[in-house]
Length: 177
Image (tube, rainbow, N blue to C red; front, side, top):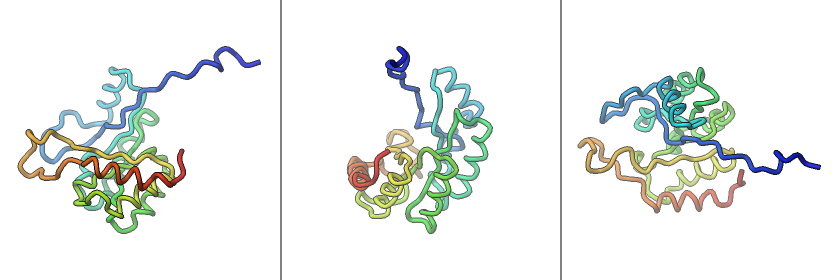
């Protein structure tokens, strides 16, 4: 006979997958530090966050930013978990992905619109497939700011629905988790 508590479904645990630490190149971000993020999550009743490193979205090689992210979040585990960047147009990206997943990253971030990758880009499709097989989530950011308030140097377009569709199709044949 099962216990009454075993029959009850568990309540969902709130998770923020849109959290970042670090500076934004086009605007001041107040308190971009993990200790402040932990306090904000507690105040809002959010159990944990998959945290990105905001500067890494704009770096050609995200390796140093990923290392900084992992170091900065280590004291705050398991509340803050790193969601580092992998660029599928950068040499060694498959090894980087494997290393990050082995280190416990629950998700990987990618910014195809910032990197000039069109919808249907084979490199992004390869990343989507690799993440699905890893398994880890692939997080995409549609935009950091509304177009009307962007800095003149911030010229990347928003992530299109076509990008998302193509990546969903790319990962459809991979193992689900």
